[in-house]
Length: 250
Image (cartoon, rainbow, N blue to C red; front, side, top):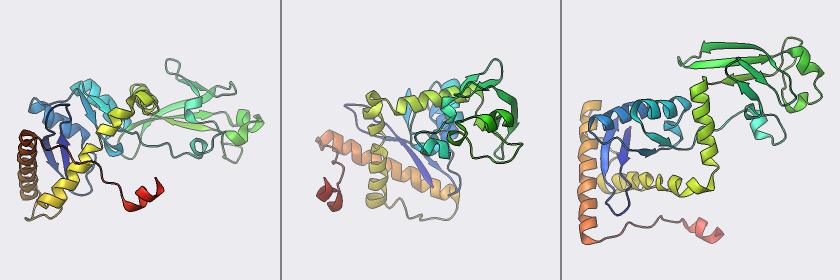
């Protein structure tokens, strides 16, 4: 697998500045990519990425370690409360970080607050509410499907700094003012298409990660030469292709 990073400055050719080669199952490469860019003196002020590169931990590390504003769609909340419009989502609870306490939309405070490590080694906070309060609540059906006398609503939170970074990123996603910024990220899809169709990126000519990486670097260099030539000749970027089906439904 190759992870390409390109520039997207206005009035300048879009050049690939870094190629990162990994095994197919190693997709979480945000921090190594940032470290490599910083070592080259090419760390961007803003880095546009897709969802695989924009977890809560990535957002925080990019800002604190490399002073990079990481912009990308965050992973969607998969809870049933988020899918149902009238249910109480985690975002509807008030979190008092100083007191290690959460308050539900009906005003009930949490019973316990425990920090632990998940299976990936990440820090997670589990918040539990009193089952007695949950059983007596008239809005229980909007909040939890937990059954049994010992179970009430539970929240699973990131540590405070990661949580706040994630909340800010999700608020940014819904802001119409940032839509053009997100649209710029789609340019890398065109780069991958050009590299695959024009330079054989998808076909590894050699065995082993090191040799595959050398091929990826050579492909990136060839892309850059082609784009510099296009820039000097005044050839504009090709427009995004629209499928025939999409054209019919437009």
